[in-house]
Figure 1 (tube, rainbow, N blue to C red):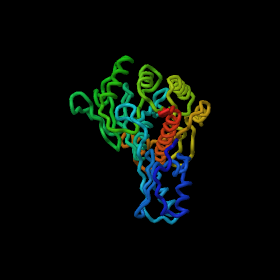
Figure 2 (figure 1 turned 180 degrees about the vertical axis):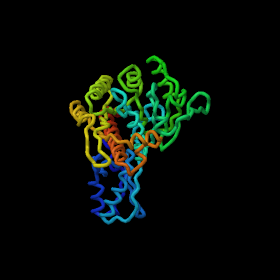
Figure 3 (figure 1 turned 90 degrees about the vertical axis):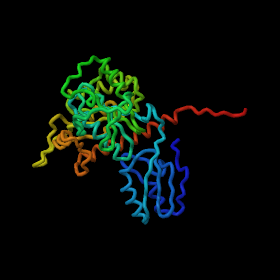
Figure 4 (figure 1 turned 60 degrees about the vertical axis):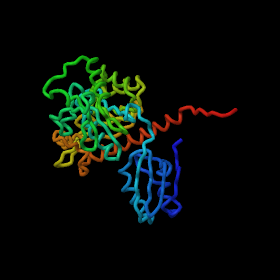
Length: 355
């Protein structure tokens, strides 16, 4: 089912070192590394481990564990994504959605996309918030214009390790997009399909807020691997987030989890914590609908400052929120891998014999 241990030449490892591979896990990967690896090779004091998903953040922890077991060589992680492309060069599409605006959906989409790339994955980001494209601002690309190599297709913009496309690269940022739903939906699908995306493991789509025509069109016409709901703890936001969950379940899109923004405010002077928008509302909603809570982010001015400056906070490893976004990305990677494996396992096998 999981393609375990195809070619594992580990005879030169000690029993203690082999035990590390058989027991090594992380919070986001609660399965032993040796059971997930598709290939493990040891030669010239170099241990090469191939995984079916990107997991660069795991390497320092694994190297440390192996060193404690007496391994003085180099550990190298590689990955080969077994998921076939579902849309052009794109393997899996992730929708970042919210029931209402102003809950930090676009900020989440940007930081999670970069965090996925930091794991070593090939990542794209589509700004589908067609009435208010904010991704150019958050990535320091205000004024950037779309280019075309052949006057037929659009080239994606590359920055911070991700490839991105936005309606903001095509229209005047000061002009209002006065488009009806069907027109906006068609423009968005055209933007997606006519962009020359390179080979991508994940395309993160920053959805417009709400559950209207654009959201429904994208949900039904894209081969979506899963969706993430972004909310704040307050009752008004939770009521709309609930509608988003209902919409995705109605169109049979798996919910990968929920992100609760503005969970609390911590005073930078005295450290006092204040639940400005309520407490644990997103957690309660997730429990009610049996959805995983991927992360809870504080109301912090640094997140806003980094976004306004066009340098997302996930790029600053000294910030506490950077680790939260990276943990969200690691959970998404493993959830999508696990989901794909279960889908493969449920497919019928056709066996041809001479009988």
